Length: 92
Image (tube, rainbow, N blue to C red):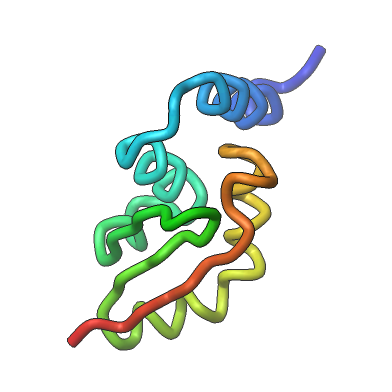
């Protein structure tokens, strides 16, 4: 029997991949990948295959440092070819 904690991420990824690409889908996947605290202090949009992340100073640095962890999570949810890079831009 598969534990629920292992089945949920796979089910979520399957549901998301079947939906058409939209800003809401990208934002939802971002929140699932980084958690509600970072989602609250950042905004995202997809430009081609690059995820553009806008966040304030210290949060931008933390997201940049974590990009190598977050990118595989997003790729698992949205597809490997959908997001190939995360670009973090600081805002005042």
